[in-house]
Amino acid sequence: MTNTSRKAPRFLGWLSLLLTVVVLALLLMGYRSQVGPFAIGALTCFALFCMSHRVLKSYAFTAWVFAFVAGSMFYPQAFMTWAGWDLGKLIVPLIQIIMFGMGTTLSVADFTRVLKMPWPVFIGMVLQFSIMPLAGFTVASLFGFRPEIAAGLILIGSCPGGVASNLMAYLAGGDVALSVTMTSCSTLMSPVMTPFMMKLLAGRLVDVKFVAMMLSIINMIIVPVLAGLVANRILYSRSPWASRKGPLALLTAAGFGAAVLTIVLQSILLALIARFEGSLVAALLGAVVASRDGIVIGSILIGAVALTKLIVSLVLGRSGNWMDRVLPVVSMAGICLIIAIITARSRQDLLTVGGLLIVAVVIHNSVGYILGYWLSRLVRLDERTCRTVAIEVGLQNGGMASALAMNVLKSAEAALAPAIFGPWMNVSGSVLATWWHRKPVRAVGVAVPELKTA
Image 1: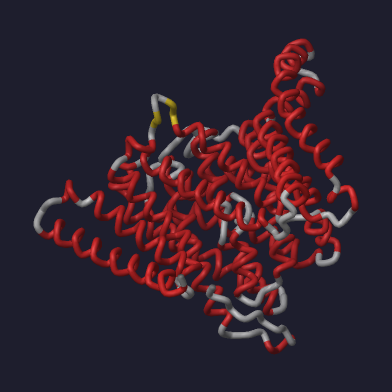
Image 2: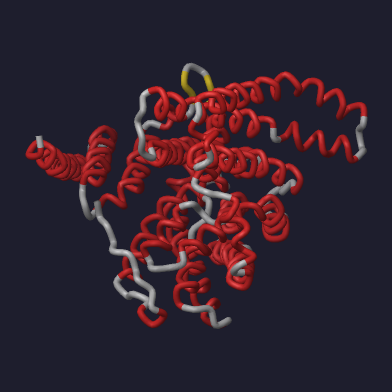
C-alpha cells in the first residue's frame, strides 16, 4: 500500500510533464484548436501531484486555479450555464459559504484582542485601507486600463485581508494572533471602508452605489462570518451542552427553522418597508431584507454543523477536528469555481489585456508587501509585527472583490483583476513567507515554527 501511494504522485508528475510536451508539440505544429484537453489534463495532473508532494503541497491550490482557468478559457460555455441556469448566481452563495468557514476559525477573543494591542492593529488598519486602494488607483492610471478594469484593481485593493494571511504570517514567523485580529477587524470595517474607498477613487470610472455595496458586503461577508462564530462555539466549546444530544438537536432545529422563517417573513417585511417608507424603521427593515440570503445560508450552515456534530461525534462516536479538514477543501473548490465563472465571462477581455493586467497585479501586490513592511518599520513596530502587517496588507479577500464586481458593479471586466490577484497572491505570499522563515526573528527571542511540508 505504501509503495503504491508513493508511486501514484510520481506517476502524476510524469503524466503532467508528458501532456505538457504534447501541448507544446501541437502548438509548434499549428494545431491550436486541439490543445485544450491536453492542457487541462496537464494542469489537473500537476495539481494532484502537488497535493501529494511534500514540498509542493502548499502550491496545490494555485495549481487547481490554473486548471480551472484553463478549462474556462478553452471551454467557456461549460462555466456559463448548466441546463439553462446561469452559473453566475453561484458566486454569492459560494462566497457566503467560504466566509462562514472563515468564521468557524474565529472566536470573540480574536475581535477583542484589539484592546490588548491597539497600536499595531490601528497601524495595520490604516495601511490596509490606504496603501492597497491608492496603489490600485495609481497602477491602473499608469497602465491606462479601461474604466471597468481599472475599477477592478481599485476594488481588490479596497477589500479587507484574506484568510490565507494567517497561515502566511505563521510560516513567516510573524504574530499569528495579530494577523487573525487584523483580518477580523478589517473584515468588520469593510462594509464602510470598501464602498468609501471605491466611491472616492473609482467613482469617476464606474457607478459606485455606496449603500448597495455596503448592504451587499453585510449580506455576503459579515452575516456568514457571524454565523461562523456561532458554529465555532458549537464545534469547539468545552461547555457540557456542546456534547449533549438534546442541545445539539435543538440547535439543528433552530438553524433550519430560522432559515425557513426568514424566507417566510420576507413578504411581511417588504410590506412594512412600503408602509414606513422613508423612516428609520424602513431603513433597518431594508437592511434585514438585503441580508436575507446571508441569514438563510448562515442559519442552514449552523443547523448543518450542529446536526453533523450530533451524528459524527455523539452517534458514531468519532472524534477529531473533521470540520478543519472539510472546510479548506470546500473553500478551495468554491474559489476555483468562482474564478472559472468570471474567466469564462471575460475571456475576450483577458486575451486582450491579460498580459498587462498580470504585470499590474504583480506590481500592486508587491507594493502592498513593501510599503506594509517599511512603513511599519518607520513607526518603530517590531520585526514580527512588521512582517505580519506586510502580509496582511499584501493579501486581499479576492473572492469578496470578485463577487462585488459581478453583483454590485455588474461587470465581468471589473472582476478580472480580483480573479488574477487571488492566485498570484498565494504564490507570492508563500514565497515571501518561506524566505522570512529562513530568517528567524532571534533578536526578540521568537521561536519560529519549523516549516512543515507535509
